Image 1: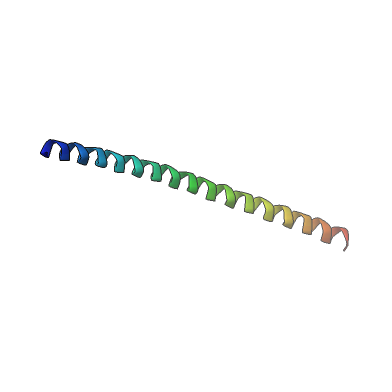
Image 2: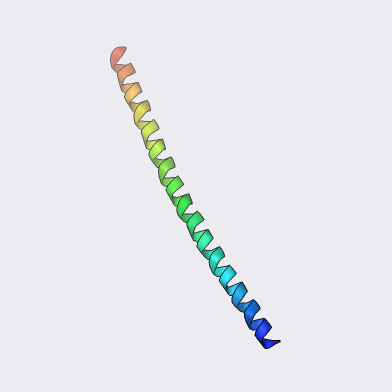
Length: 60
């Protein structure tokens, strides 16, 4: 009985560790996606600014 409980505990402990690792990987991917979104936002803002400057220079 005790041997079976120890085996089940070890299995559960290993599964929790695997789940923790999977969550850490997903969190890392989320951070990468946030950085990529921020980079995209900066690129769009630069394009809009560049377009606005060209437009205002053309019509002034």
